[in-house]
Image (tube, rainbow, N blue to C red):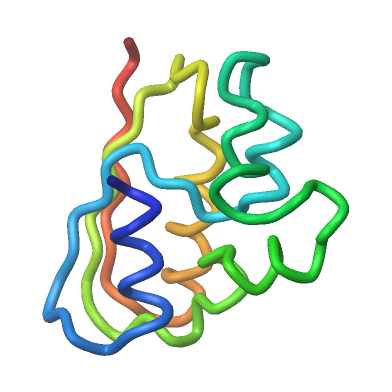
Length: 108
């Protein structure tokens, strides 16, 4: 998924380009923004909610300086699981770093 793609881009240097669909870039923001059904996934997949250090270390947005290739983002503006701000945040950070990237939001 999108989170895996963003992790591969930020924690490894093996790709020439990437396509991110509904990607999570900030795990702490996901906890605060997602709906109740999805809200505890990170507890089982990442760490207990109290472990802020691990959430920060594993969030691609905090390692965005490591991305060296072009990226295209696709995200629905009404996504109830991953807020579209996640894509916007990564897009803005890459643009600031001079990395070629495109963000295509979908209305529905």
